[in-house]
Amino acid sequence: MPFLNTSKLVTIERHIAEEGAAHPTSTGELSRLLRDLMLALRILARDVRRAGLNDVLGMTDSVNTHGERVKRLDLHANEVIYRAMDHGGHLCVMASEESDGLMRIPDEYKKGKYVLVFDPLDGSSNIDVNITIGTIFSIHKRVDPTLDTPGTLEDILQPGWKQVAAGYAMYGSSTVLVYSSGNGVDVFTFDPTIGEFLLTFEKLRIPKRGRIYSINSGNAHKWDQNLRDYVSWLLRPSDDGVRPYSLRYIGTMVADVHRTMYYGGIFMYPGDSSSPQGKLRLVYEVAPMAFLVEQAGGRASDGTRRILDIVPTALHQRIPCYLGSEEDVLEAERFLRGDR
Ligand code: AHG
Ligand code: MN
Ligand code: MN
Image: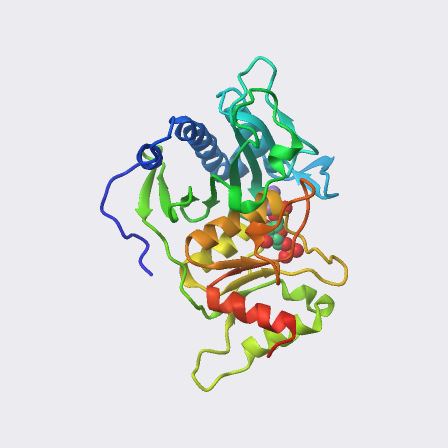
């Protein structure tokens, strides 16, 4: 699949503004919100690349709400996004993987009609060894957009199909931003020489089937038998040569999903005997990724239910996830049901 499929020179700000203008009721507020978010992502793209030099690697003394030791870059990223977004007047509330509860908009700032939830740094275990990490974000409209009061947990716990926009930044060999506001998926590549995210791939479509599966096989002893049967089947050579699949697992959801978006196949973080709901969080990891995968023509489920239909019951709720090529995810769901 080509890295580039457009010759247009378009920055993400212009792309968002043009997309917004296409909506008759657009006020430009979402465009301004995203402009502010892009500033935070530019800063993080810089800081991630200089992490070793700026001495922001390593562990803090703190443990987050998930009982995970927090890396200094996690907290730094959380702070950068909050400070870029808290005063623009577009948000009524924020929440993140690193926040125990709601991240309130300071009293002195106007409350807007949007909600931002995010994973400031995805793939933390890979930070210190220079492996690709990312940032995931999801934007909802508040439940009652006529209010100008501080947002509530109800504004956060909305089903994924209601997302107004979602995206991720991936800090890899280059920094890319993958974004959708419901009109397909567009990819932007950061040009640090001009400090702009430039459109490099328009309307990305995930292949209907791939030949790669992505899962942490170290948990295989804890998997449901139907899942073991599915993975064994993927590894059994088929007469048409489609199988065996290859295993690719980076351990950064953003990177594993990004590869799946381009090459197809399936990314899985299943529940298992010790963690029945798996590890990944619905609100700010799985739902935004599911939105993007569906916008690219793929499929995203928890093994039985469509991810975007699931109404969250808690901010840090975990959910099993099977994301990727439509045919691959349907096949996995058949195995998980016990159908052969
Ligand atoms: P985070 O760093 O935001 O906590 O996310 C890490 C997640 C996700 O990026 C990745 O897919 C998964 O953890 C890997 O988990 P395992 O190491 O258990 O495979
Ligand atoms: Mn994460
Ligand atoms: Mn994280």
